[in-house]
Length: 173
Image 1 (tube, rainbow, N blue to C red):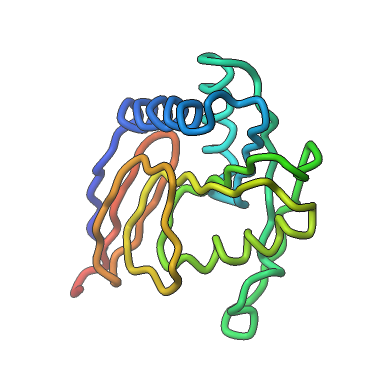
Image 2: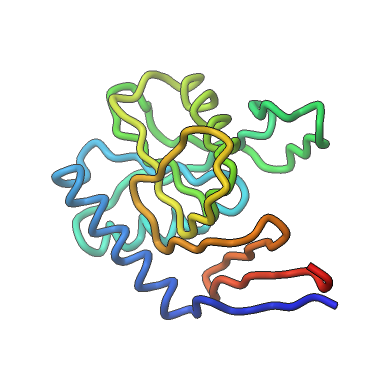
């Protein structure tokens, strides 16, 4: 049996995205050089929503997608499933790249994303936006923009979508 507990609903997700959009604009004193790159798969929809909200508040920003599967340091430990593609819509040289992901857990996907971005150029800076930070870092990675800190146990998983955030715990855990 699996236990599911919804911790954020659709309105909570929308509010978190709006707050994060304001924080991106404030921290960067505008968005003239900002590029949002959603990490495949979970970060792409979030980057698009964040981009829409930033456009509503300030002005349009480039939004793209980054597939980091071939940059992972655990390729030998788990199968690589490149089913997504990267789409970096603008030159990242001298840009402020905001990497966007739905959940930050160990930090290994972010490490892979840093390597992937380097193949596209040399940004002025790279920032990280996540909807959920669940802790358990294996690398010294810290997000710049967080929708929700959500401490979890290692045997729980977190499902994130525009419809909400759910903690899933297997029975017997």
